[in-house]
Length: 149
Image (spheres, rainbow, N blue to C red):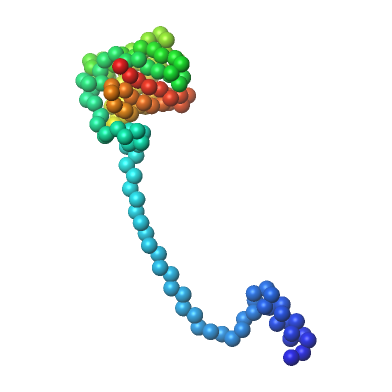
């Protein structure tokens, strides 16, 4: 072997480009697929250990205290079981924040209690957490809210 062939062999070996003799190869790849299903309909309730129970409209209707700003602010919120202009009415006390002060109606959407403003837009989304209490967030500012009797 001369010097040129030796240097070329070292270069090819060092760079991984060394071809060597041709050898037939067969590669087999086996994959396994696993499906995981997560029910996110009442994820918060599930995390808190609450069952999938959602109260009926007549059970929901009544007077509540709405806790906002991490419990630092509270106000009254009344949910009626009587329809007004085709919607169940909601009335917030003057102590409620701007988003919640404008509450005019409420509805059940699946397992969520939604509070709507005077324009019919959703102001808050809450899920039942048991003991006549609901937990959720204000849609406008993302603030955590609790609705309890």
